[in-house]
Length: 446
Image (tube, rainbow, N blue to C red; front, side):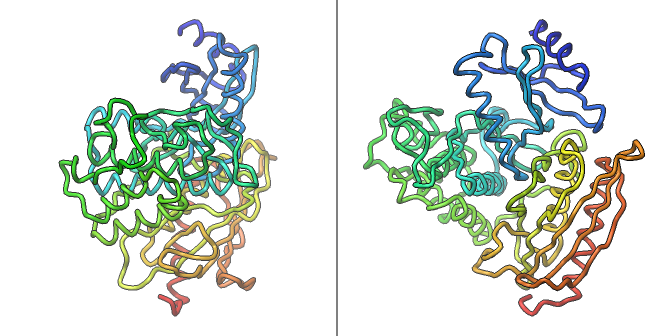
């Protein structure tokens, strides 16, 4: 690996300061590096030279192509990619933390409330990916990263794009994935849709709570028959598991896809309802995130954002129903390289607003949790200026009632230095002002 380290450091020396080897797998190695222009750490995934042709290269290319289209706070984004001097690479935020697999190896189980929280965040990410007609097909603890109380989906190397007729690009008869987490239809090489990811997430949730996979008693994952339903997770778990959680997990693990939750959005809502119905505390971390890892996560969250809507949620109902707010990036003007920092601001803004009392931030502009309608839309823009050699931006924002073009509150211009700390402070200040404007409006639905 020393030879690869030296080769990568030499090839990318003009763009990055390669610091250390973080880890290596069958196809690729991951290095921590420093981006001197944006002044933050990144992770550079490099395809091993011996595999830089044929199928491995095509899988690596596919992962980059797929992940680059997904812009969500709980999906590890691809910031850029390329090939220099035979080094095939992609650049991602450096996520400080650990994989869910490492967590399970160390602790064996995850507390119930935290397990539900992790699963809800992954379901949110899957909802977004499926909305872009992308099925992950390899949801497992190794591909879930944990950082400061939040979960991120990684590795879209075997993802598939669903076609308009609901089919996909998988060749029937070929099973690809990780057997212990594959749905029956995926394991037999049949056509799959988003419900195969729901099954896989059910396996992960079962393992977090019980410390064992749902069908670990079988000699092989393929030995399950259509008649064999999953046993309630409470049968295995040392934790007390409410019936509603038992039923939710069993449903995700049904043999027939039609018997599972129909969409990741449905599963996400079921997880939140289970959390609230059982009085489970929120496991959300409210402290500031590290500026050397997860803080850059929202990077891809800005692209051009055709949909423009990002996710957070209000956990633990107040005495009244929270006002539901959608956050959208209306426009980003500036060098494409700096969209990553706009993503950081967007991610911080959504989280800060979602933690405000009486405010819920939602993904769907039509229907909020509990069949609530959307109350407000917060639209914001960023203009990046590099003309004086510094990296500065102007941010403007507008709050308006859903369905209306008339602004209730506006922020004409806010000058921000494009450092991670300043972006975090600015997003927190904007969230406070928006929350105050909503409370002052005293929306009748609240």
